[in-house]
Structures are given as structure tokens and as C-alpha cells.
Image (tube, rainbow, N blue to C red; front, side, top):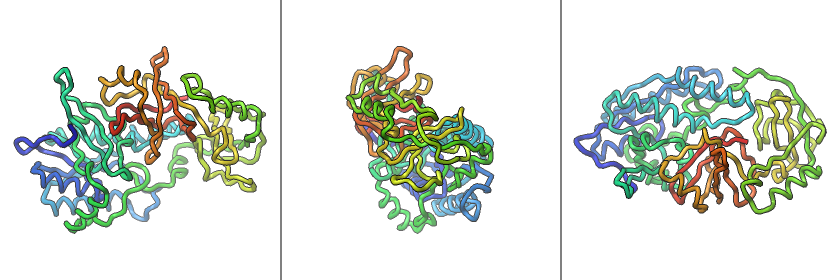
Length: 406
């Protein structure tokens, strides 16, 4: 049964107030529902040298969050997680880019900060639940064994659904979580904030890295990863190996074709330029190559950090950008409801996403002899990126996620 937990004896909820309109309205709705609400702002970043805003964004955001808390008449605190954020998110990002993968800091931030450190801090404050302004819903029901299970469900606003960003949450975290705006449309949230005359009512949605703000990612990465000039190799779409690969992945997908990859080497193409370091580029990237004179736009097909080479091809339909499936290693496989694992491996009616705001596409899953999860796409997908997260859905419920590996 979807819905919020029943209030008993004035239960305390600590709300993660980001200084945006969504968390502001979430706090208001909880007050209206009779909870004992406490606002908590997380300070997770101290270095403004790479942010694109003129002022330090966290100061403005914390001020706005405090003003909303004052208007709602709820206690407000600021907690500093900056050391842990650097260790768990930023350093992890640097490591992943250095190894040629592309991490998703927003998914990690929710797993490591909002629903781990923040949750623990909230429990110290006597919280029964934590709440956020995510557009996502929680389902609660009793299974056949009499145990309570929790579901992670898409938000009702299809344009704002943020379940993908919460794909790594587990049952314990969900049991303590409330999502007050998950059943609302964004327009309804704005309307509520406007009616209340909240300072955040017309505030733009945040963009950029979680809790850091809008940044220049190349500048951010260059703080840690040194530039290293290397070759840009163009792979012609008519190369025999490319044509053979295109034929192979055009066939109906199975566990073998799901793991087919186009093997590239510098001898297969032509050097057309230089780059600043293979670790600064990701598969499917178009911007930042600074190479012109081609009939079609250039896209990064593959990167080789070991050889410091990036391979590119013309056109977004270049076969080198296409994939029939992917692998999630058993160490990275995450079942939101572990009870679904065995049944899910026998059922094939799933859709998945490999990026936020991506149109879900149909897929099948299976398990190899090593215990890894193999995801087989019904149709060829473009720009499957190692290090990103795949989220698997059964209708509206997010049931599984994992880091994409090759």
C-alpha cells in the first residue's frame, strides 16, 4: 500500500532542507500533517573556487532554508559533512575518472550522505523519520510471511520523477524515509510555496553536482587530475570491424550479444587531433573535443586511459556508440527488496534506465555462473557508460540497481 506512515504520538521528522522550493514545501506538508518537524541543512562543500556562481551557493541556500524554517515555526540547524563528502563523494569521483569511468555523484550523495550520515544525525536528534523533497513515493505492505516490506516507487510527476537518484537505497533506509511531495506535480509544489509566500517559491531548481552547485567539471577535475596530452583517433563508420560489430548487435539480444564490445586500436583509425587527458572524457561525449571540419559531429566512442587515447566517430548513429546490453558485477548488484531477486531473474517484463530523465526501455535480466547480473536490451541503446548506474523497474517500482561494468 503506497502512502506515508501513520503519525503516532507526535512523531519527529527531520527534514533535509536544501534551500530549494521542494524541501521547503515538504517541510510545510509535514507540519500540516501534525509531525514534530526539525529542519536540517547539510553543509557539504567549502571550496567555491570551481563554482560558476559569483557567491558561495551554500551560504545563500542555508539562509533561504533558515528563513523558511522561521516562517514555518520549526527548529533549524546546520550540520557540516564536508570532510565526509570529500572522502566519500569527491575523492571517489576523482578515482573513477582517473580509471576511465564516469561516476554519478547524485546517486552516491543520496546513498552515502542524505540517507546515511544525515539519517544517523537525525536519529541523534530523536527522529522517527527523515524526509526530503524528492519526487518519489514509498510503498508499505505486509508480505505473505507477515513481514513489512518497503517499495521505492516513481513520483507521480513524470517530468520530475527522481527515483533513479535513490536507486541505491535499502529497506532499512526506506523504512525511515518520508517523501511528502512524491504524489504532487511540480506546478502544485510551486503553487503551495507561492500561496505561503515562501522565499523559495520562485527559486530556480538547483543544477550541477550534489551540494556543490553548478561547476565547471573540467576545472573541478583538474584540481586533482593532471592534464596529459594524448591522441584523438577517428574510427570510420565503414571500417570492417565496425560493420561486423553493427551486424552482430543488430541480431536479437541474448546474454552473449549483451556483452559484445567493439575492440579498437590506434591502427584502425586516423589521428585527427590531440586531447588533454583521456580521463577527462566519457563515452558519448560530443562537447569539448575542439575538432572541426567534419561532415557530421564527432562523438567519443571509447577511451583508453592506459594508452591515453580517445576514439571518436562521426554521427550519433555510429555503430561504435551502440550496445546490446551490459553487466553488473555481483559485488555491485543491489536489490531494493531482496525478496524479489529470485522471482525477478525468472520474469522478463522490466524496463530500465541508465541515465536520469531517460525514456525507460524494455530489457531482460539473467545471471551468469559467477553471479553477475547480465542486462539484455530489447533494442540497441546508445552511450552506455561504465561507472554510471542502471536502475531496473517493474512497472512503477524500482527493484534493482548497480554500477555499469564492462
